[in-house]
Image (cartoon, rainbow, N blue to C red):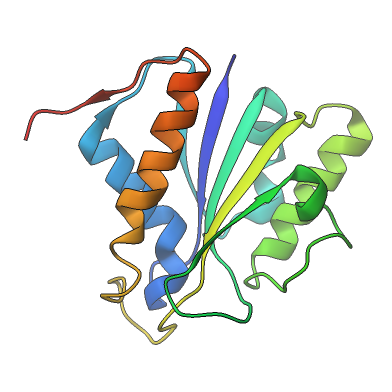
Length: 161
């Protein structure tokens, strides 16, 4: 099963870059098999329809807006992500991701398994670093993904320190 791990975000706005930082964290710390693709989607949104349509399983990593404590990690599945069904407003580029999923769904190429792992930001100020409260969530998201891939029979190896 081809799995896409898609990191969204703007690296110049602090915690808004969470998804891209998460992809870099995964690349630096783990060796993934060929059937798993790590993709830095930045703020491309609808420009990545082809990536979504090539996968059988998608993880989207991003910052989200909503009520709660900064650094809180939330999970949404496909039916909650699709337009009109998400319970919180997502970051500005997320509209493009929702539209991309909807377009793929209409074309018959959207995988059934789509998960958004999102974190509530502490700061969206101009910075290329994650806030101290959000940075530890990189390990949490990595753990979730590694565990779920292992449950699906996909072996991911931790790189030597």
